[in-house]
Image 1 (cartoon, rainbow, N blue to C red):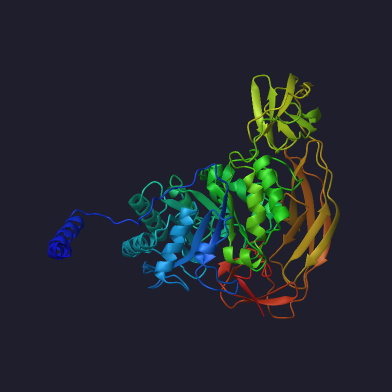
Image 2 (cartoon, rainbow, N blue to C red):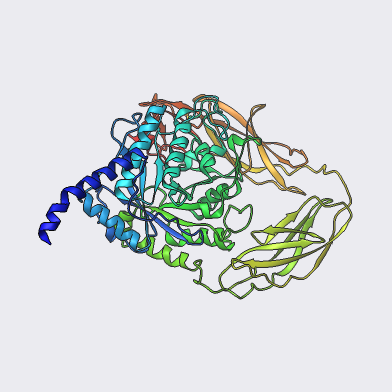
Amino acid sequence: MRENLRMTRPFLRAIMFTLIIALLFTGYQWHAPQAYASIPVSKKLIVGYWHNFDNGSGNIRLRDVSSDFDVINVSFAEPINGAQGGTIGFAPYNATEADFIADVQYLQSQGKKVMISIGGANGQVQLVNTQARDKFVSTMKGIITKYGFNGFDIDFEGHSLYLNAGDSDFRSPQTPVITNLISAVRELHDFYGESFMLTMAPETFFVQLGYSFYGGSCISCDNRAGSYLPVIYALRDILDWLQVQHYNSGSITALDDRYYSMGSADFHVAMVDMMLTGFPVGRNPNNLFPALRPDQVVIGLPANANAGGGFTSVAEVHKALNYLMKGVSYGGGYQLRNGAHPGMRGLMTWSINWDKFNNFEFSSNHRTYLNQFEPGGVEDLIPPSVPGNLSSPSKTSNSVNLSWNASTDNVGVTGYTVSYGSNSINVAGTSTTISGLSANTAYTFTVKAKDAAGNQSVASNALTVTTNASSVDTTAPTAPTNLQVSGKTASSVSLSWTASTDNVGVTGYDVFNGSSLVTSVMGTTATVNGLNANTAYTFTVTAKDAAGNVSTGTSIQSTTDNNQSGTDPWAAGVSYTVGKLVTYGGATYSCRQSHTSLQGWEPSNVPALWLLQ
């Protein structure tokens, strides 16, 4: 038998060589020896980034990642021939290739998905031409196939993405770094098949900021603002989820035109609602970015205070999730536009390593919370209690304000349905305004509560309300009171006042410098910038309502500070270059990146832009 085997070896080698040549000439593509499989949309996820380096948080072998994580993003694949070369490289840190591949396969055998994340803060990628695009695709194929990743995550930061001047329509982008990335991702996804996973982890600067400023159309603003929007839009049909980083961010203007700051439930609710409602890009009503599906939205959070700015406590995150996924209000400042979204996908964290450093506070607590939404996690057959005390606090000739007592439920109320005649609307909270009604007409309203399982309560008490007779509102708001200077610098004066009242409702305030209108605001504070040092000014504030009625003005005089330091104070709307010195809060800062400043990007809030001297 041994002799026979020896005699057949040359023959076997010849057959194998012939097969290999045949496969090469028939275009055979070698794939990793594992079945790619996406995750059911009903699965609530904990996604974490695993360090392929050691930054003081500690090194973890890949196979030893906490079982509470469903998706592990290996961080990072990075360019190896410059940001614009397109060639991407990856090599395991502190492990052999064989051990790393074995760890990937071990996690996959446990039902986990292991993805390769591209970019990161230090790995900027700019696909400026087709040559760079082609190198990107070919080298990414090599990495994905070699290590058997389930998909890839786009974590382009810094100056990887931007928009050329005049590239104003996110639906048909023209900038090469945008169009080449879209094309490259399409090719990779088509190569590996429908189950190959795609996620993105942009910062709020590249997504939600696009509501206020869009880099291809705004004047004198950062051309990177909102630059992920065309990528998300073009790839939304194959995008598994978007995990916007709700950290290392300045304050962002939400759909209610108010600023929200990191670390609060309001910030997370407002940022998510923008993605689940959609918004006009650059405030252009003809350029609407459409909403994502709830299962395409994941909130990105730092695992602890060491991991990034904007750390949010477990309790505060659960407040946000209770409102977003169950409709349970915490009485915050931001109100959801379209009710609760129980189908939202879950949470992402930077990072797995920092989570372990923090005794798994993030993954263990949030995994327990999200488990209640899993199929079979809570068998909910119990409807919510009946909404009580339906009443109408006010009405006009074409609208009725309604309010009612909150219902309770064994898991949580996700919203309410208000019905009148053959009409019905869905409401997140316990009050709403029904508009578009006829004058001097009786309407009968009822309210039902609903939960995430689709259970609906019995209808509330019926309430009949007759709208007012038609009339024109000529009543002006009361004048703002208690106008005072709350702060000043050599070039700015900050003002605050007590809110005005109106028979229907105040819609905003106008602030004048002398006789010139300088700003319009919805709240009761404003800052007037661009003033001269050591100069007296007279400021006036008026209130206005929806009918265009304007109150009498309230005025105050103030003199700006002396500018004795020779260094300008920081102000919004100013174009700063690298090395420019400004003062803010009694300290001096040096500009680290050229940019045009925005309200909320004060030097103390954005260390990526300003260095404390």
